Amino acid sequence: MNQGYIRTASDDGLFTIYLCRPPVNVLNATMMTQIHSALEVAEADDTVRAVMITGAGARVFSAGVEVADHSRERMQESMDVFHRLLAKLQAFSLPTVAALNGATMGGGLELALACDMILSTADAKIGHPEIKLASIAVPGILMLQGRMPPNRLVEFLAGGEPISGQEACAIGLVNRLVPKDGFEQECGNFIARFTRMSRPVLRLLKRVLVESRGKTLESGIVPMSRIYVEELLKLEDAAEGIEAFAQKRPPQWKHR
Image 1 (spheres, rainbow, N blue to C red):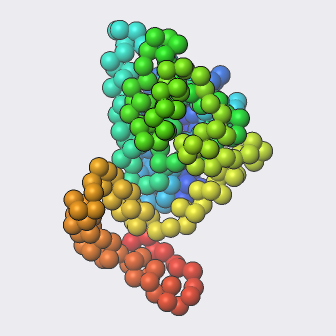
Image 2 (cartoon, rainbow, N blue to C red):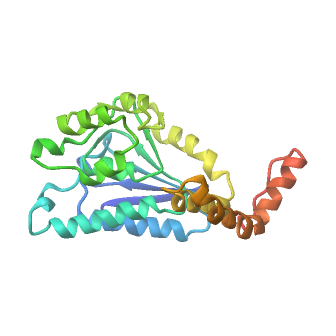
Image 3 (cartoon, rainbow, N blue to C red):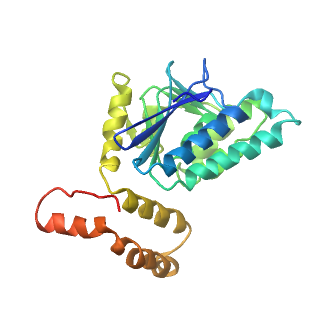
């Protein structure tokens, strides 16, 4: 489905959002709003079990946020729309994957960082060049905390030079490298491990992950265990999972 600056497709449990604003998929407020709306569609679709965001056409994920939106007159609106989108992704109820098919800069990287997982080609250029424009990547700084060694993080942000997908993978920022040939198929193969799972169980897993952020075992064990006992164990799929394991057969999920 085409929605102006994005295109969406849904197949076998995977909902894909393609960034379609050539030549380099620069994000503006309208495009961000369209991505946000697409995520709401995916979340409401009972057949969806994972979401992937990737670039369409040219081998570029996104070169960042529209420079014109950085003016004093338009900055607040653009920031508000972007921050709502990032928050939506971070709290999304199903697994999300950013598939970096090429250059991923500034706001494009922040969009990827808000996803649960990142896949990338080895030679994709990944960076926060904001410092070169006398700017600071605030959402990126917040989301990169704990995901890069502190000394590398300062070098990455204060120097403004990109790193390759291969280097990003080596430091754990990227989950896995994907070859250019058959890129989308290979990304789909990676994500298939999630789309094979029970949708309501995936939703509960994501809920526990989101609600346990910042909690210790001591502070989180009681409320998180309550979700397990009062919600997960009541699912038909929970019983099916145990029964299938005992009978040594593949489970047949009812997604309820």
